[in-house]
Image 1 (tube, helix red, strand yellow):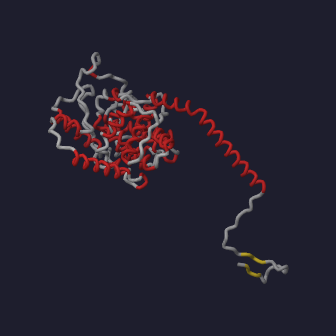
Image 2 (cartoon, helix red, strand yellow):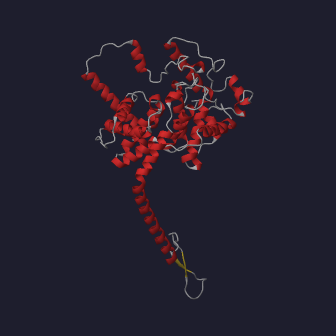
Image 3 (cartoon, helix red, strand yellow):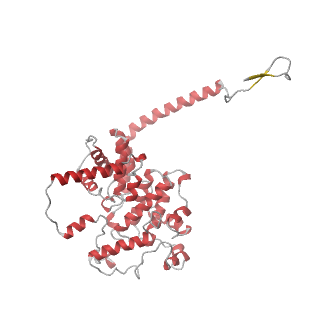
Length: 411
């Protein structure tokens, strides 16, 4: 809108009032700079593509070497005196909730579990430090790949741990994990191989989400601790395609190891974690947990209709099949020539913050807000022998008392 000004100069100028925002006119020099920048970007992208094609085989060979070098050994974790496999699902649930709470990258979760397992295969870990090691691994993995503003703060992690630790213990454990692993953090995660294979085979986003869900289910089980990420990626994608009714892909790399991994994965899909199923029930993840539950229900109904009743099995066999998280009994003297039947790597950790007289460690002597599992009198002393069913019940009662049952408890 233009208004004539009676008080303005006599040359008839106007004051112009407009609702449109003012735009600065681009000069010829700025336009030339923008064109040059776009041209440089196009050239750089083309050179990157050519270099990728030329060095792709070398890159993949390096990644396969890295996954061999950074693969944990489940047999060494078996030798832990206090850490048992039935405790693992509680810790993985905690790490998944913390990972989601801070909106970290998907590969950060897999790198966290890899660091945790590598550390537990090299050091003796007491059960009151198990969650602390998991938090330290999460901090390292987040600093390695995520943006700085997404990295969790120590006080935030300590609040999720019900205040069981102090800042000094988090810092010292983080340094202890790095020194134990010789600062070798890099690890090609299963998430990387899954995205690479899905892009090459042009799988849908739904297939990628289902494969990611299957890979995270595998984090809960000992059977997959020493499985290579590339093998896990191929097996999870093949299983995801079968579940979603997508055509099978034959890339020529399938071998017997992939078949074994695929079969083992299919046997662990029936009882996924409630925390993980809730995570993948959102529309962002294509509701793949619901689709997997529907698929398993359909398969069970087909089996009931088409298969005659099976003869009764032995009681011991049925118990073994129904308990996914059962820990095998490890008797003393399993390893000849080793004291107490276990290998004795260095104790974790041995700094001032973990000294017996430290005030933080004295807190374990009184019941905190989240109860601590009672520790035997002397770490070399074995638990009293009980019948197998009583041992299993006692294990789960101890886990519930230490880890907590709520989503934001000690675990």
